[in-house]
Image (cartoon, rainbow, N blue to C red; front, side, top):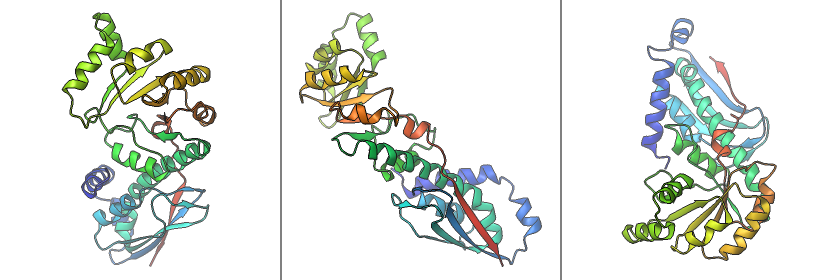
Length: 283
């Protein structure tokens, strides 16, 4: 998802937002001939993400700037590690600094948080997945970071899969339409490559959904006991996803109920930016 063109569009927009008429501080104070060497330093332990995005901030500011990444996306690092080396015209390095850091800190924060969730369920067969609760316009960046942390991506957009949620089912019920019949009708019209998932919030909804032959059933905000009963009831007839009420404190117990997937909105909507810094030396 995170293509070169996607990176350049977002980074160019961020640079324009940050310096719409140039960086007047650097232009007034820093000699045009000055060069800079800078180290991207980890101020805390984490998992790296966003290397190409970090580099793009400098390349798009001044093509003469060179960025050497010393760690790869998805690689863990310790506090004090040098993650990248930046060299080039000092004005450009200082202009791009904040945007490069913003992306790298945000993406590394998501990767680091995801890795913590993945570690909690490593002894089970459950996979950790993200949701569509992403920053508008930055979904590809944040979901790339989830994968760097060892997680998995859910559907990318509303166009990628059928996912009938509680509000969809409520409309069908209000109209007196059978859930099974409605789902079967949708499946008959869909391409064979399109996945169908349905969210339920009660055990008694499971059979009507499974009868339609869907691929994944989401058990939303179920208690641990009901998750176990739901997994048993589904009996392998569909992939079972758990959602709602997931945190680092609860994810292990949720995974141990036997679900296949645990979707966690907090991976992207609540991740803290990792503390990274750029130590700059001017010559």
